[in-house]
Length: 136
Image 1: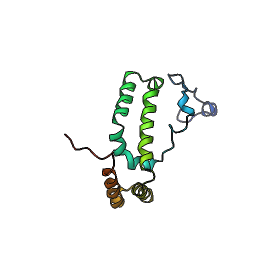
Image 2: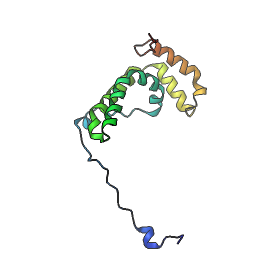
Image 3: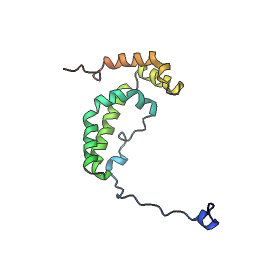
Image 4: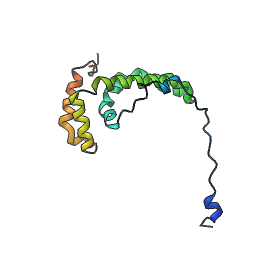
């Protein structure tokens, strides 16, 4: 019928096991790899990370395409994290980065309210090794 009986309501479905074994790697316990970088920082740095970490990201995607078992892409995944962390560390103390990030948080990620901060941040990026390279 439409309604469940009491016994059907309380019956819990059997948990489905993941098709892979969970693996542990030494990096799980190493500080400085799986950093808790906040969402706003990642949003602000996304275009920079996209350029700076393109090779690491491609290697990870190629590895995942070959074998979807996460255990077989751990090294590639860690390399992506390390690259993202380097970019974050390079920008985290820069006032232009902080101002753009705080603006996005204050304005609930409505980019249009943070155009001045975005412009200042982009100008900062252009003065670094992360600047956009013009096509050859």
